[in-house]
Amino acid sequence: MTINHHPSDESLMRLAAGVLGAGPALVLSVHLEGCAVCRDHLAHFEAVGGAILDEMPPSLLAPDLFGRTMERLDVAQPLPARGPVMKPRPALGIELPQTMQGCEVGPWKWLGPGFQWSKVKIAGSPEAKVMLLKGKAGLHLPGHGHTGLEFTQILSGSLSDERGRYLPGDLDEADDGVDHRPVVGQESDCVCLAALEGDTRLHGILGRLLRPIVGF
Ligand SMILES: [Zn+2]
Image (tube, rainbow, N blue to C red; front, top):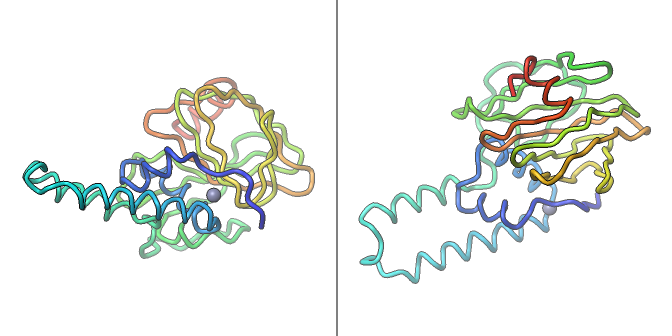
């Protein structure tokens, strides 16, 4: 599998520091499961963070800062979603990545013609805006922008937009400068895992479609 689209260094650094939200952290972790290049980058960022801590005399650290920082580094392990499966999985027609083992995943629900979604719940992070999306082959998704970052990991099929083509293993990180109109490849249906960071809202037609049904 050749991976052409990766998360930004900034997002990997935030994952290493434990300050990336649970939804984006899950999407990045699924990407890391299949991407040795990003696993190397993450290990580097974790090592750099550890080295900075090692070089700081304890007297310069606030009494509880060291402990808090180490807790964050512990939290920053790349597979935050592992754990017991909470409910039997509905049949989704796709094998989910190992990294999603601890997530509760709902059945496919109608979102539009040829377009379905499934709610993904991360244990301990009920506020995370994360879901699976499935579009039928050739579907033109509604155009949309975002107020913040949107992370999309392709699990099967392909998506294309004005910036390129995204295949299984690819991660698209779209910021508020991206206003896109993705199209599902003709070869098969496309399933992807998508997360919005923090209070990111979708605007455009997709936002108006998702908000009343999905809640974000
Ligand atoms: Zn990568």
